[in-house]
Length: 456
Image (cartoon, rainbow, N blue to C red; front, side, top):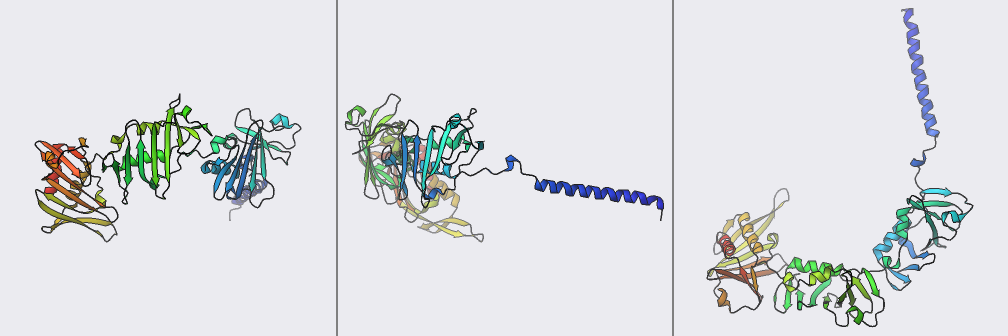
């Protein structure tokens, strides 16, 4: 053994031991060290389950008091007036209380509450919780200089703390913010009939058991599915912008003694709703009320703008609304010769559904699915260039001896539809089954449609 190498070994060994000891020391120190303020979880102010809240009171110093009461599953505004509450708005308020956290401690035992605006709190909130003896209370004072928060305290504790300004905003509400602003309280899917009156003329629509809309007056004709759905969506979502009068005994100042427009709805449960639309305000909003109510509200002008487009905006201008995936079969008759077609659906080894088309009469023949779907697509894509609402006899349009007839069979529960196409001179026309109107078509596109089915 070389004695000169021994000291070098011991130097390395001692150095390694020192490094390990220093690491252990750092570990122990870090374990005992208090976490930084930023790492501490914020203090939850209340132990609160919003589902158990029965009542909320918001009192503003020198102002009105708002009291919300839960009745069954619904919320009601009990003060300063008795009206239905906006449940989503109330739920938002309760969520803010449920998640309320202390932002910072301002003073553990302040000498003067007035320094924080808490000698006479600007706002106080009281929450009655099922199973809890005393209401939970919160007092709010002045805002911080930088606007990031607001001073607050609990009535039974001296400590003053701050909460985030956005939380304070969610609690500082006016009665109108929390009342139900839904004008008609109706869902579009529940509407069965629709009757509209106005300067543009009146009309009525009805929905059949397949969900399809059609005009019943002033003539029987098909309505555009998406156009009607859009109008019903505006009716469903109509909200008050403000209240013009809680109890208008005289409707004349609001133009509601003789409403400029009305919208009457029959619903699936047998009930009805009628919206009366009166005079516009200076800022282009409209006075409205529901029939029999003394509450007059102001609403945005979007619904009136839509109604002003009249019946024409709701007409079905397409030859037929056809979704190819819903079609199960069809009969096509050209110059008196009828052919029948049917679709079969199966799943491949991977479970993917595929469709196949075949002609079933007068002879059987497998068809290219793409060609059939293309022909059906042309039906849905062909729009009328003119709607003739007071047509003459069928012979005037070549519809007494149609050039082409199509009867479509839809999937179960979705009905079907029929149309015939005729030509008179260079013009092409069509008429849907059960429809009073005649549709004038682009002659070239009508020829393309007939040719597409002829080639199947």
